[in-house]
Image 1: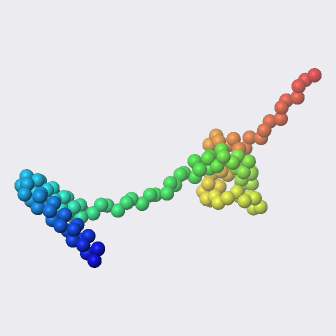
Image 2: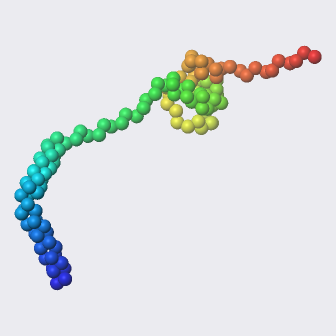
Image 3: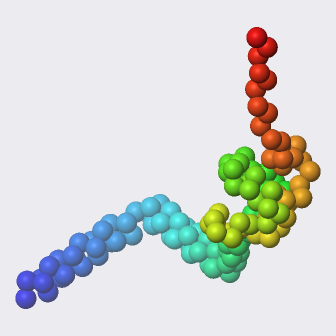
Length: 127
């Protein structure tokens, strides 16, 4: 019974506010125009649905760039791969694409050719 009374009181307040707005013709016209414009905008938005979001393309760097990056980050592993001409069998170096391994083995860029350089022993000092 209390809920019914509270709903009735709320309805009475809403109706009183509506009647008050209706008595003021300028406010009533403005509210009507605003409502009409809002409905028009919503109908226009529904008529033209937004385009589906673009699917991101996974980056596909060139194998030589990826091989150089690997050589810089993992020099010892890259030297081993280049000297063997393939991935080592017993050492897990993680997943690598064939193109990247081939680029490490056969690459001619300065970074990849630097993997072939043997460290030079310091020259003995003449006594």
